Amino acid sequence: MEKKTWHQTHKEKMKFGDKLADSVANGMGSWTFIIWQSIIVVMWMILNVVGFVRHWDVYPFILLNLIFSTQAAYAAPIIMMSQNRQNQRDREQAQHDYQTNIDAKKEIEALQIQLSKIEMDKLDKILEILNKKGI
Image (cartoon, rainbow, N blue to C red; front, side, top):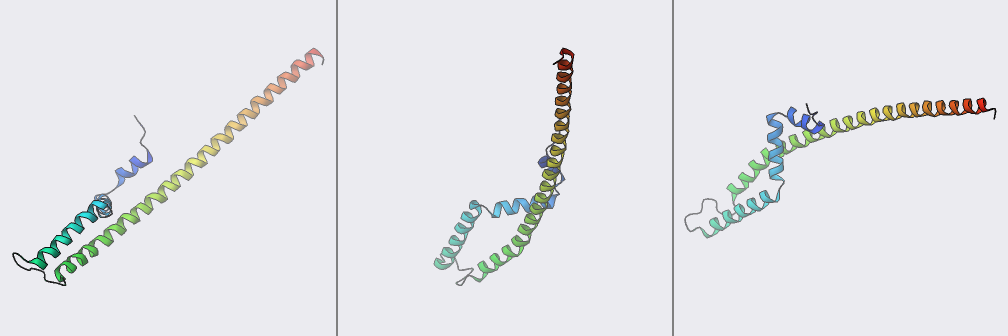
């Protein structure tokens, strides 16, 4: 059985709300979103200024401002949830990295002790051989 990475384990623990918050934050923080929103706003303004069919939101575009306010009211907390989750993930990863470093340090120290023992054994054998030869 293949051992899961820390990142895979973390992703599996994510709840639906965490995944949704990340998706919204990723979507709203993209150039695609900015471009599409800009296109819609420009079209909204053009259609309401020119008004071939009818003006449903005349200048100063109060309905458009209301839509932006509503979008911001929902987007800000969702993005903050995503940031909070990301901060928690970073703390957990830092703790995991710290523990990995501690474990690696213990292994290195154990290896150093073993190497020192091997070296001492070799020196003892060399001295023993030299003593047998009478040097």
